[in-house]
Image (cartoon, rainbow, N blue to C red; front, side, top):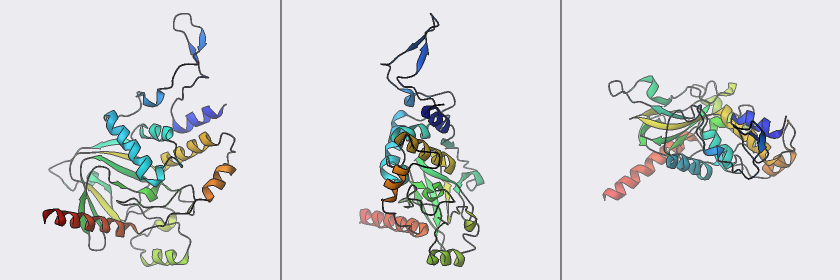
Length: 281
């Protein structure tokens, strides 16, 4: 069993390189094609991309995640692994909006006070975000994203390998803070984050579709698999319990501050309102 076999098993995808052997379909002889280029990352396998999107939109989503969302930066997940992650079955999803039942439960991508273990990036369509004690509502569209905190392992305490920066749109609650002030905050808001202390991530906002949607949904397990595959790709010699060199390099990076997700959502709403009023004047 080679390292390549292990990575292929983790990312559930075949990696073709110059060391692979090929069988000629006429002579039935195994041949090595050392000069054959690897375009497998762009190949649509039968079990991949069940929801069809244009290559341009896939590329745009890939570049956006790699450059704008810290959890998907190349320092954590290689661009090749990220592309394969985006082509997992069911990662790119569609939602058909029911005009006759606008508040249908399936229209909700996140529901307040309910656990979630996934990240969402809107590709096409609009959603309504409801946040805050006043239940403030505002709309967002393509390339708004939610749930970055849900990607972190529930057993990790601010592991440097999993930055905890919130997205500019929203994130999920991060319950694993060890400082006393954070613990007091969680205790004071037990009704809102009741199951957070059990290692679950509780959304303190709701996201509801307003029309047909195309979006990316990445679960915590898929993200953790991508992290592991990228780490193994960068550190071929690292043992099963982690890569010493990689861990040291990551440990040297400063942790990014944790921002209250409701405040982030409301700040974005105020920014949108200010921009709209400025343009109208």
